[in-house]
Amino acid sequence: MPALNLTEDSIQYLRKSNQYHGGNIDVRYIEVTSSNKATILLADRKLSLVMELKDNSKTTFDEAIGLSTYSSSRPGVLSYFSIFENLWIQTELYQQVKEARDSLSHSNKKLEEANEQLKLQDKIQKEFVNVAAHELRTPIVPILNLSELLYSRLKKRDIGRSGRLQQIQQEQQMMQVIIRNAYRLHQLTEDILDVTKIESKSLKLKKELFDLSDTASNIINDLKIDSNIRLLYKVSQSTDNDKNIFMVYADKGRITQVISNLLSNAIKFTKQGTITITINTDNLDNNELIISIKDSGSGIDPEILPRLFEKFVTKSDQGTGLGLYISKNIVESHGGRIWAQNNMLDQKGCTFWFTIPVADLHQHNMSHGSSDRGKN
Ligand code: ADP
Image (spheres, rainbow, N blue to C red):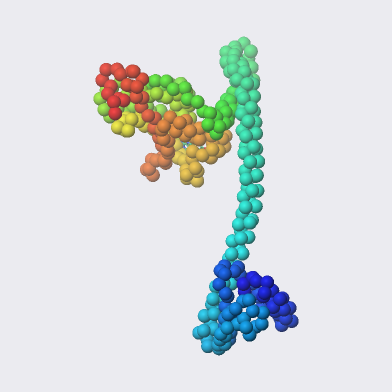
């Protein structure tokens, strides 16, 4: 029904009488969308009356209405009925859209407010974590150093003279527990500080030219591993014996951190077996070295495999799940990639790979002898 003042009285009347008769007639207004003289249709599913509105300015019914058609023809009535049905649905949809739009703009505003709040909370939280980690780091370093010192004195103590072998052994064990935990706490604070740097996009790289194969062998030499783990180091050189082939322009400390993290994970999850670290030059055409660390340990739990490099993803009792997240960010900030896979079924364990772009030696004025790197 077009929403005109003219019809309002009749509608009120209809509504009232409808209440007396069980209230099964519903009236809904539709918007008047054109200025054309409307034809009024009255229809139910059996009968219809179509009246032509001939002259709207007239005040008497006879003068205003033109040709009127009454019909009980089923197809005719049903076609009017379906027009009404369509209008009905359209009106309902329009209403819903309007309501949705209203509530959307309301909830958008709320969402914006909540978002602002969240940003503020997030900032406060990050600042807090940053300050807390800094504060924690300060006392941990002397605890670590002094415990190490005490432990080394304890080891040197003359067991023969004191004759208290058992007591000394116990003291040594206690010191080891203190040192181990202080190291863990130290690592945790370092990781938290790294994460805050990554998240605030302030992780700075101190790049320098260095030979990755030398760095890797230094890391391996410094590693303390049990005798039941065999550590192999391979450098696979696909081209001629170019001594500059492993030169990279990167943050040595950060790359060391990545390799150490992958190696310490490999050691942690390989109680007994072999760990192989390889630096591969197969992808030199793409100006990158591929470093792989393969172990024969437990393999990566399939449950976490798809989220392996995300924050706090861990299957280790004492782990935080930050190491791989930090490693990924370090590798990517150098323009490299990192990925992992469980080894084929016949082999145990898993392999981690990461790439690092080789140095453009021409750019760094370091073109030695046979190297033709950096020309492409
Ligand atoms: P954390 O070692 O503190 O848990 P990481 O981010 O270094 O944190 O590792 C996340 C998780 O990835 C580990 O808890 C472990 O479940 C899995 N993972 C990493 N390296 C290996 C590996 N070499 N073998 C098996 N699982 C691994």
